[in-house]
Image (cartoon, rainbow, N blue to C red; front, top):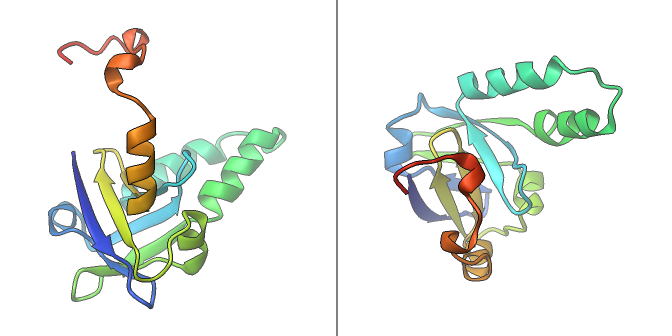
Length: 144
Protein backbone atom coordinates (compact mmCIF):
# COMPACT_ATOMS: atom_id res chain seq x y z
CA UNK A 1 0.00 0.00 0.00
CA UNK A 2 1.13 3.49 -0.67
CA UNK A 3 -0.23 7.01 -0.70
CA UNK A 4 0.63 9.50 -3.41
CA UNK A 5 -0.36 13.14 -3.82
CA UNK A 6 -0.95 15.01 -7.09
CA UNK A 7 -2.70 18.23 -8.11
CA UNK A 8 -5.89 18.41 -10.17
CA UNK A 9 -5.45 20.71 -13.16
CA UNK A 10 -7.99 23.21 -14.52
CA UNK A 11 -9.43 20.57 -16.88
CA UNK A 12 -10.08 18.05 -14.10
CA UNK A 13 -7.08 15.92 -15.00
CA UNK A 14 -4.72 14.42 -12.48
CA UNK A 15 -1.50 12.48 -12.89
CA UNK A 16 -1.90 8.83 -11.97
CA UNK A 17 1.13 7.95 -9.85
CA UNK A 18 3.77 6.05 -11.83
CA UNK A 19 3.83 3.18 -9.31
CA UNK A 20 0.07 2.80 -9.77
CA UNK A 21 0.25 3.06 -13.57
CA UNK A 22 2.81 0.23 -13.68
CA UNK A 23 0.13 -2.21 -12.52
CA UNK A 24 -2.57 -1.03 -14.92
CA UNK A 25 -3.36 -1.21 -18.62
CA UNK A 26 -3.93 2.50 -19.10
CA UNK A 27 -7.46 2.69 -17.74
CA UNK A 28 -9.36 2.87 -14.46
CA UNK A 29 -13.08 2.83 -13.74
CA UNK A 30 -13.70 5.64 -11.25
CA UNK A 31 -16.88 5.97 -9.21
CA UNK A 32 -18.17 7.14 -5.85
CA UNK A 33 -16.65 5.29 -2.92
CA UNK A 34 -18.66 3.63 -0.19
CA UNK A 35 -17.16 5.93 2.45
CA UNK A 36 -18.02 9.63 2.31
CA UNK A 37 -15.18 11.74 0.92
CA UNK A 38 -13.66 9.04 -1.29
CA UNK A 39 -13.76 8.02 -4.92
CA UNK A 40 -12.98 4.41 -5.75
CA UNK A 41 -10.95 3.43 -8.82
CA UNK A 42 -10.90 -0.13 -10.18
CA UNK A 43 -9.39 -2.00 -13.07
CA UNK A 44 -12.06 -2.93 -15.63
CA UNK A 45 -11.88 -6.56 -14.44
CA UNK A 46 -12.36 -5.60 -10.80
CA UNK A 47 -15.26 -3.32 -11.65
CA UNK A 48 -16.95 -5.96 -13.83
CA UNK A 49 -16.85 -8.40 -10.91
CA UNK A 50 -18.43 -5.81 -8.59
CA UNK A 51 -21.01 -4.85 -11.21
CA UNK A 52 -22.07 -8.48 -11.69
CA UNK A 53 -22.53 -8.94 -7.94
CA UNK A 54 -24.67 -5.81 -7.70
CA UNK A 55 -26.75 -6.72 -10.75
CA UNK A 56 -27.46 -10.19 -9.35
CA UNK A 57 -29.66 -8.60 -6.67
CA UNK A 58 -33.28 -7.65 -7.14
CA UNK A 59 -33.96 -3.93 -7.34
CA UNK A 60 -36.87 -4.15 -4.92
CA UNK A 61 -34.77 -3.03 -1.94
CA UNK A 62 -33.89 0.65 -1.53
CA UNK A 63 -30.28 -0.13 -0.58
CA UNK A 64 -29.53 -2.02 -3.81
CA UNK A 65 -31.20 0.68 -5.92
CA UNK A 66 -29.07 3.32 -4.21
CA UNK A 67 -25.98 1.17 -4.70
CA UNK A 68 -26.79 0.88 -8.41
CA UNK A 69 -27.25 4.64 -8.73
CA UNK A 70 -24.28 5.71 -6.65
CA UNK A 71 -21.72 3.12 -7.75
CA UNK A 72 -22.78 1.88 -11.18
CA UNK A 73 -24.51 5.06 -12.30
CA UNK A 74 -21.57 7.27 -11.36
CA UNK A 75 -18.92 4.99 -12.85
CA UNK A 76 -16.71 6.53 -15.52
CA UNK A 77 -14.05 4.97 -17.73
CA UNK A 78 -10.90 7.07 -17.29
CA UNK A 79 -8.11 6.38 -19.78
CA UNK A 80 -4.59 7.63 -19.20
CA UNK A 81 -3.15 10.11 -21.68
CA UNK A 82 0.44 10.15 -22.92
CA UNK A 83 1.55 12.07 -19.84
CA UNK A 84 0.01 9.60 -17.41
CA UNK A 85 -3.00 11.77 -16.56
CA UNK A 86 -6.63 10.77 -16.37
CA UNK A 87 -9.59 13.09 -16.66
CA UNK A 88 -12.19 12.65 -13.94
CA UNK A 89 -15.57 14.29 -14.54
CA UNK A 90 -16.52 17.35 -12.51
CA UNK A 91 -19.45 15.65 -10.78
CA UNK A 92 -17.05 13.13 -9.20
CA UNK A 93 -14.62 15.87 -8.10
CA UNK A 94 -17.62 17.72 -6.65
CA UNK A 95 -18.70 14.58 -4.80
CA UNK A 96 -15.42 14.68 -2.83
CA UNK A 97 -15.30 18.50 -2.73
CA UNK A 98 -12.21 18.94 -4.91
CA UNK A 99 -11.62 22.01 -7.04
CA UNK A 100 -8.99 22.50 -9.77
CA UNK A 101 -5.61 23.35 -8.28
CA UNK A 102 -6.19 21.27 -5.15
CA UNK A 103 -4.15 18.26 -4.15
CA UNK A 104 -5.66 14.79 -4.03
CA UNK A 105 -4.38 11.59 -2.47
CA UNK A 106 -4.24 8.27 -4.28
CA UNK A 107 -4.31 5.48 -1.71
CA UNK A 108 -3.49 2.05 -3.12
CA UNK A 109 -5.31 -0.45 -0.92
CA UNK A 110 -4.66 -3.39 -3.29
CA UNK A 111 -8.25 -4.27 -4.22
CA UNK A 112 -8.89 -0.70 -5.43
CA UNK A 113 -7.43 2.76 -5.38
CA UNK A 114 -9.11 5.31 -3.17
CA UNK A 115 -8.96 8.99 -4.10
CA UNK A 116 -9.71 11.83 -1.70
CA UNK A 117 -8.72 15.44 -1.23
CA UNK A 118 -5.47 16.05 0.63
CA UNK A 119 -7.35 18.39 2.99
CA UNK A 120 -9.91 15.66 3.77
CA UNK A 121 -7.16 13.09 4.32
CA UNK A 122 -5.31 15.40 6.71
CA UNK A 123 -8.53 16.19 8.59
CA UNK A 124 -9.69 12.60 9.08
CA UNK A 125 -6.21 11.26 9.78
CA UNK A 126 -6.09 13.40 12.89
CA UNK A 127 -9.63 12.64 14.03
CA UNK A 128 -10.08 8.91 13.47
CA UNK A 129 -7.74 7.81 16.22
CA UNK A 130 -5.24 5.01 16.01
CA UNK A 131 -5.80 1.39 15.08
CA UNK A 132 -4.85 0.49 18.64
CA UNK A 133 -8.07 2.15 19.80
CA UNK A 134 -10.25 -0.01 17.53
CA UNK A 135 -11.61 -3.47 18.25
CA UNK A 136 -10.23 -5.48 15.34
CA UNK A 137 -10.56 -8.84 17.12
CA UNK A 138 -13.53 -9.90 14.99
CA UNK A 139 -11.39 -9.91 11.85
CA UNK A 140 -8.92 -12.58 13.02
CA UNK A 141 -5.95 -10.96 11.30
CA UNK A 142 -2.73 -12.35 12.71
CA UNK A 143 0.64 -10.65 12.77
CA UNK A 144 -0.46 -7.03 13.12
